[in-house]
Image 1 (tube, rainbow, N blue to C red):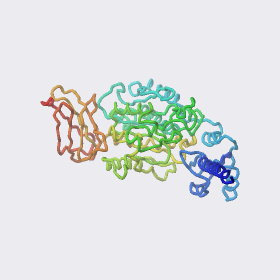
Image 2 (image 1 turned 60 degrees about the vertical axis):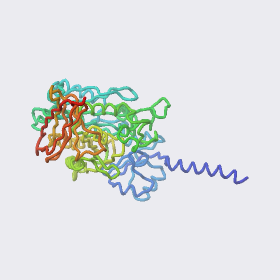
Image 3 (image 1 turned 90 degrees about the horizontal axis):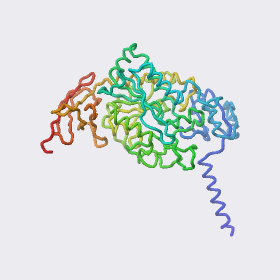
Length: 495
């Protein structure tokens, strides 16, 4: 009999222990620690820093940390000589985290923008510069059906022509708000300095530049309204209880249909939950549709934090077919952006290929050279006084990408040999492209494919069903600008 009573007790005790290990102790005290390095904090084994979990070290910006602790942990830190200032005691973990991130007002202060602020500024720029700025809707959100907007900056902005297109986008993750701030600052700079700054004037003349400041509009509203700074995913009701409550939602940057099954998590409670199937969410579908329409040559996708550039890719040890050029651009981009400390620059690192994120999708499906810029260091939401410095640093990265969009590369223009009408045709570089990539095609409206390349000679094959395939050898790419190649395809006699 004693054994039959002991076994259930043992099982209950084990379950309680496992639950405590997973959820951690209830921390009811928020403390601030100044003049301390991350290593000095992390040597205390009960503290941890995890951008998906704010229940210990909430933020570590420069040498200042905000930490959640139990009274016993606070006593132990002080016993070990750590100078801790008690900021707030409260039984609500969310209240403590809101105080750590938002400050005493418990809301996101200026210069941060709400989505309504961003749309007002975009509308104002459009009215002030009607030939340069155009705001338009690209989709709606999955939960609240809110509009998702893109803003285009270009000379004769309402004309959709054959100039190369470049994309800058932010806020796949709703708490990574700096991407929106960088986009809105870049919009102002390009529109207001056009005709005054020669570089900006040249870029706006030469390119069609697109911004999607906030992709995750519903989640961004939760964060910027002060409700919950932890909110990362969209606002899909994943536990089906009829309300959006943390940690509901789907990680939009794990929802793309390129290697979706290999990345993220199948657990709805995870911060990396990828959804039930690829492109289940309307937000990444909206960005993907825009990318298919515009065929961006280059793109920056903004995230936070780490002061690092991720680019395609390390795919189980395999590098991207364009690895050499991607690495060169990634390192140049990283080197153009100074860190918060001001004594170095961002670093470039390979990103994973086996994950349903935007940068493998844009490169693997469309051919866009997309670079993830992890802005700032120490937290996704930075104190308001840090915003301007991080934004200005990242504007240098935008300038670098716009310079790289000037080439060198090959602009392949495919037309019907009889009518001279543009054709959507496959352009394949056999010595470069592997089966890891979808075949690149020319734009259906213009018949043009822009492909960044090093200045040397290339072989390529141009094909389209119903037309005779054409192969070229030793096509030389110039050292500067876009080398033009016009390809006239003849209807096949085998139709």
